[in-house]
Every structure is written in structure tokens, then in C-alpha cells.
Image (cartoon, rainbow, N blue to C red):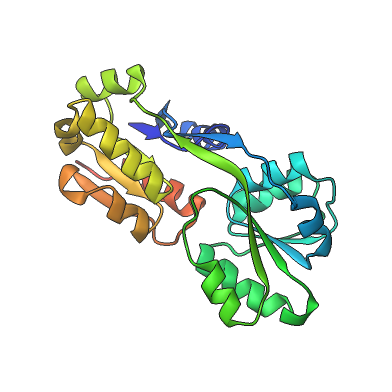
Length: 242
């Protein structure tokens, strides 16, 4: 079985290791490239905050590169983001173990609207609606863009060759934007028809909506919006007769 990994690097490394231990080959083809951006006022915002919200490991890494403080509580959307925060030296890390809605629920339960602002370190493209949810709960929510996720403009040649050669069994998608970028580039390369023999593995319903289900052999959504749940889904699917 061969699965295409579409996340920005370096986030494909751990995924590739997890799949390889189960005999699943991986073709790494990032659809987005992460570029740090200037974040005016980031240091001041963090110093005034009661907690940091992180919805991606990329946000954590960008924050760690731009600011020195590691003592504030940090609420991560999921375990992978939490692990990145711990690796970066943040001492008080909690995982919502889900999506942005789960993060908002945890923030409301653990934090006090009167204790200070919440700083969300994010990219230029943000999924979810933390601003509305946390604002309605009385929090001073502040989103600061610390990176930009730049979409690739062509399919990598190795991926194009694999699709033409019908050697791809599945593609793993972890964000709606990544999924939409892949589909658009496959169309531009004249390879949309090759997806009829490929399964799209999607992290969430929002991701599944972006892959355009009619293009694929199957679209499978993880039972929970967690990376480990999607990995387990792919591994389990390997054993299903085709």
C-alpha cells in the first residue's frame, strides 16, 4: 500500500514513520510551504496574555522562533501541536485532543475571561471560528498571524508519475486548504481521472467536503478529528479486501 502525505514539512516525518512500521509506503508531497511572517506586537501581546492558543504545530514553531517566553499556559488543538509546544520548551501545555471547537470548549473550561487576553498564534488562513465562540464567552481574543502557508503551484513530478502509473492507493489530507489545493493541481495536470482508483483519507468532515467526493474511489473520514485517528484509519483500511 502506498499513501501520499500532503502536510507541510517537517510534519510528514512522524507520519511516514508511523505508516512504515505497518508496511505502508509513503510518498511525501507537501501541498503547502510554511513561511514565517513578521508579527508586529507579538511580544507585547504575549506578555499581556493569560494564555496562548495554538491550532497548529507551525504556529507553535513560529512563536518559539519569534518570542522567548515559555511560561504562559498554552492550549493546543491536538496532541501533535501539544508535542511541538513541549519540544519547543513550553512548560504548561494542554491538548484539546480534537479540533478548534474542542479547543474553544477547553479554553472556556480552564480560563477566566477576566484574567487577560487570549493570544491565538495562527497562519494567514484559519479554519474554525474561535473569535466568535470565545468572544461570545466574554474573552478578549486576539489572533496574531505568525506564518503564511503558501500553496504549491504544481504537483511534484514524483507524485504525477505515481498517479499516472496507478501506484498510489490513498492520499491523506489534514486540512481543507491542502485538499482543495491537491484537487486543483490534479485537474490542471490532467490527472483528475486517475483519482478514481485512489482513496482520500480525510481528517474531518470539513476536509472531506474539500476533496470533491465524486473524483475518488472512496472518501474515508477519521472517526475523530485527530491525526492519530486518521493514521489508525489508514492502517485498518490496509487490511480490508479491495
